[in-house]
Picture 1 (cartoon, rainbow, N blue to C red):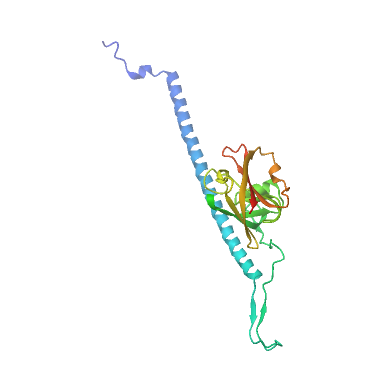
Picture 2 (cartoon, rainbow, N blue to C red):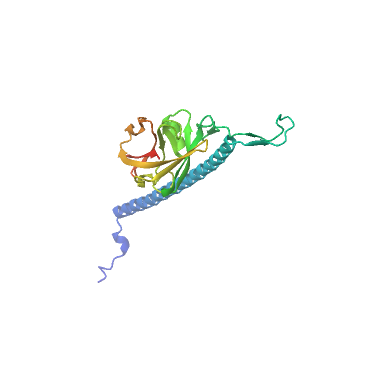
Length: 249
């Protein structure tokens, strides 16, 4: 009986010790990697929320500027009993029409050193999208990527609300921010574009499809003299591009 009562230590061989050390190493490595991934996720969410805040600040500033523009473009001046008036009565100056739909906007600079301006805003009531539309100065891929971190950006086309195909690109963060819900739009949904003169035009979605990233046919300016917009974003797996086409109504 005493011969079979052996201690547990007799079964812990050097090979078993080595395997236990390896298991411990992989366990701690796994915990470390999970911690790193969680940290990246938290930082990414923080960065996106920060971008959302910056975008909404830009939108608020843009809305104030467009309100001021409307006021300036509809000036009504009344002069009562002006002694210099030969008619000695009331003179009224009619509203002065604006000569351009796109007014000069303030140039801002990203943290990466790229200059941009806010040329319009986009509102899609169905998916609760309301953002400024930015426009860079160089149209480089690096500049566009820097601007996309802030807000949807002009990719190609004419000035907002003008004849042609105004193309807007935005990130799909697979949540509720930026263009994440654009792939859920359907024919007949309404998209509103407000330009820097304060003019708002509604566009109705008439087509939606997916293309490979290299396919830029959706940016064609052959609109038969109509005003159109094209929204561009990624699919949820980022392998394809979702294209949403809409026409002014």
